[in-house]
Image (tube, rainbow, N blue to C red; front, side):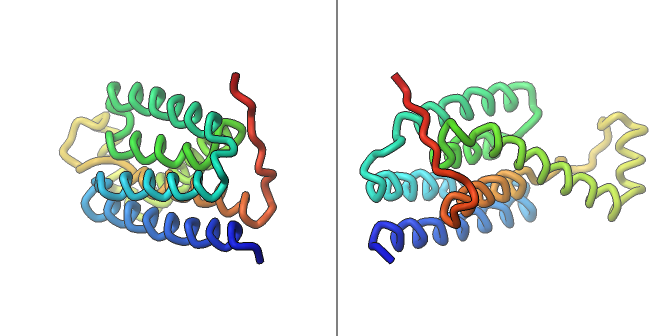
Length: 171
């Protein structure tokens, strides 16, 4: 196995570990640590060095789009700030070609988490529904888990060859 491929796997393992950490933190504290987002950014720098900057424009545009959408969702209190930051940081790894797939996988994972919550805590769900979310029930779905799952599926899809490593030329 060539050295760049070994390095990509090492970065992917480190990234997966950081995503688990962010997800667990989101479940327990309903907060994604800024440190985890910074580590994701640092791992992307290493990833870009291993790839010699190939696809960097696509990655930066994907992150900008993800950040703009995430910020809009944050402003309307649909997602938390940590969710928006983590999604944008992971978009760097995903690139523009697979950003829609990443978003869709994240939404599906979030939906599965929501269904699981409804199944395991139906009384709470019905009370929240009847009060139209006005009660003091804590925050909603820990979307850091869903974001991490969506990002990991796409990243490991690249590495295992299940997804083509498509690059969209920018400019």
